[in-house]
Image (cartoon, rainbow, N blue to C red):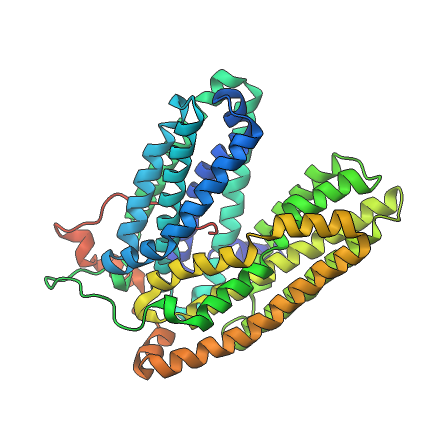
Length: 451
């Protein structure tokens, strides 16, 4: 038993272990700031909750606008270099937060942070697909997902401690995030170059292939995936509000449920990802996610009529089921994005995926909140119907996206992408050119939010 647990807790490869360490450091730094951000903005900066919301909305719009150009930068200069640049910029921007004391300054810094984060997320996604061998990709990313959740938990603990010590300590908490982001940049600097990072004496040519924005099937894949990811709106917004306003469950249960979700997302990603290795098995995982999402809706609507311990048990059951929906959807996405991107334009495709994903989910907080609170049981059934439609659409879009690649990408390019490149650890032993020569990349960093 202990041997099995030890094997389960061991990273699939040395490279996966190094990437997971980077994820842990990134999430610790990001989580440290996020955990206390609402209190920081209101008590330290002096903003109202309405101003905070407006600033976050403007920053989200900025991220949406720059997503495609950031993808093109990643393809032009290499994912690791852009990832590193993003990390350095974000680390520097964290140092500015303690000196912000007005709404315009807050908006400007929030936009700058979001733009830098978009570059980092796009580059991180392209780098990971590029550097991990296909046979290890899903299991490695599951392990990284666990490390990411551990990091966010550590960051939340640190951020909560800063709040407890008062506003004077909280004001300077972003400095700790800056230090962690710089440590993150060092961790990325030590990673091997991916194939699209290797530099030669020849100038880097414009990426081959058709731009991702013209691949309507890919846009549909990312948009329907965004619809499926509205499970997070239930998790973080709709179910907590429903629990507090529509049931007799104790309010403290919200925090306990979040803890349950966090523990599951640390322990179970590798289990959920087993057997997922191609489009067919990824879509099977999408179906599992869809079923669990629907079950969550049915269980939650039942709590409106229950009382006492039965309500509490149903909320626990609903949260466990919803977390499985999250885990299976994550595992499916790691395979779909690798299988359905043009291997020559991964940065471009990552950028467009930001557009499609945003289109698929930006409407959900308002719509789901209205349906659940105003329409009751019929509203919950409508939410379930929306995600079923999203899952069906994702199946059709994924098959269309595969046909698009087969029509527009040379067969040998697709075959090489499926076979993978030489083991990056072998390169790390001898040292890829850009790590040994005068063209070493900038100090680096960030992770994906997914990341």
